[in-house]
Image (cartoon, rainbow, N blue to C red; front, side, top):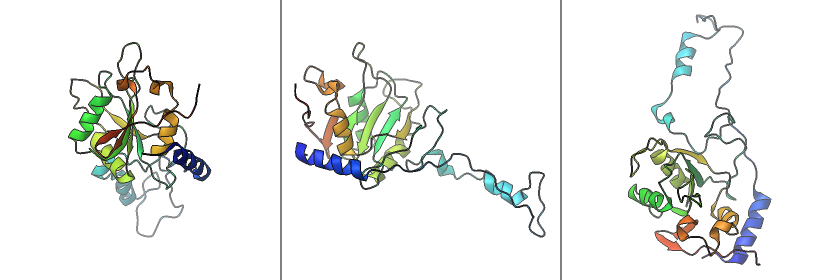
Length: 222
């Protein structure tokens, strides 16, 4: 288990080393040569038939968004509007799962992950809930132990809709703004949701492989 001192030191190192990564546009600007190559017929748009076919080709696997791709599309409800942060070693391991059914709670997510073979592949789960109704707010955060596992989770749950109880919700996954286990622990440990009077089912939870472990104590004192 991580000590408070090592967490603070790690977070300080992370803050000093963290950098913003650039955006990749989701639209490729069309570029054409002013002078067509000899023997090639151009269309009215200045593109040869071969180039038109090439631009329309989309590999079948591209329907799954890679978590390594960073999209700048503020108008999209599932796109991030600001640059992504990576962990101190440059990885993306923390995912935000959106469009979850409101009756689908934290422990349901853990069960679903384990049922799909991801037991031991993640170390932090947090699903915000409404304090009055007890239902979830429709999204959750999952930190995977490596970027490879985060990619596998994305492939499995992007577009997922086979919920335990019937629902029209379709899961969508994006990288979280806060990346890495230590950064997420520091973000959550002083959150009121982790207070003693809050039911356990509302709280963020940590795992060491398949075993749940205690969440670090808050750093603030009354």
